[in-house]
Image (cartoon, rainbow, N blue to C red; front, side, top):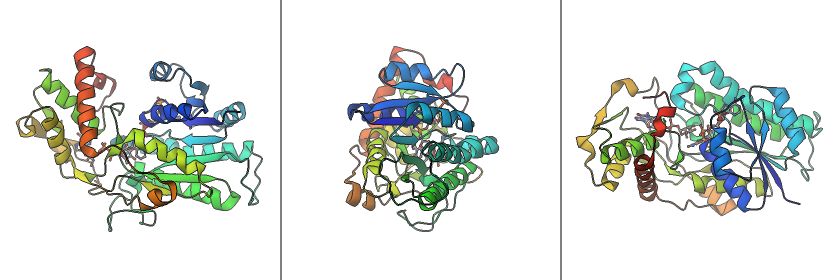
Length: 342
Ligand code: NDP
Ligand code: GDR
């Protein structure tokens, strides 16, 4: 019988790539969707015809229990979150509820549906395996670089704090109940399906607009922040591998290379044959209350234990996104209309 996976956050960037990956591996894939008329569900239906949908919300414990009872998953991937860092200052409580407490509700749904009591079990056979989408944002203000699984956390946003809660809770359920529950500490990963509010997509859309004569400038915040950017299609492979391992362990996933936003901008404009300095406007109002200045992964453990390596380079990723957005804007409406962020 096909293995069954339940994915929260199916309508997001990673949800779609993970679903495609699992379908290709022969899984029966279920996606948790919230809301009465969620507009992003139509994207999933178009992109992923073979995914089945189940209603539920990370804010609602009962709905998660019902979803787990209905699907009977072998694996649960908890990707659902408020994931945009600036939004977490504006809606800090909601971020704590969805991105933090949502992890507790999902773990409880699995625990209750599996009949796991308060005692720890050493036997993990037949258990539902749980993946939590942890984040390099938990490292925040780093004192050592690159960052690995033992680097201490110092989150710099309500989002990072909520993710740290979910991370420790996942570890705690593993230790308390013997559950196969793991966290992937993923560094930034991007693609043509990335939300238009995140910097890589904002830049690739901005370059495409300028290239097509639809805009004359691109306004950005902090150009000096450095991130370890990889390709989302590579990172969902790592999520799956973590749940196939013999032992439940947490892993850092990233490329091991870091670039500034300025370098990202330069690469994107260069890919379109343009000079970034002619178009980019630095806008102080887009700076964050507290910034994460530098992130760079040390993915040695994932390479050694999981055989995972990123396939797409930074330069290939940037060129892929600029080309995809140029084609997209030449053909139809601008996806940035769907976001309320500048
Ligand atoms: P997206 O923002 O693209 O997707 C977030 C998903 O969460 C959407 O499907 C959204 O669904 C869902 N969601 C929001 N609120 C709820 C809720 N109350 N109940 C159920 N689902 C909800 O994120 P990504 O795909 O980029 O990231 C996936 C996960 O990985 C997130 O948890 C993110 O924080 C984490 N992460 C991402 C990284 C990255 O670089 N992309 C790096 C490290 C971690 P809806 O359509 O209903 O809004
Ligand atoms: P991040 O991603 O906060 O790292 O979180 P984002 O792309 O939003 O920002 C990256 C860096 O770029 C700087 N920046 C800008 N960012 C945005 N969005 N818009 C701008 O105009 C702009 N100008 C400069 C930011 O200050 C920041 O330093 C992402 C999310 O996917 C999280 O959910 C995930 O956990 C982390 O990556 C790892």
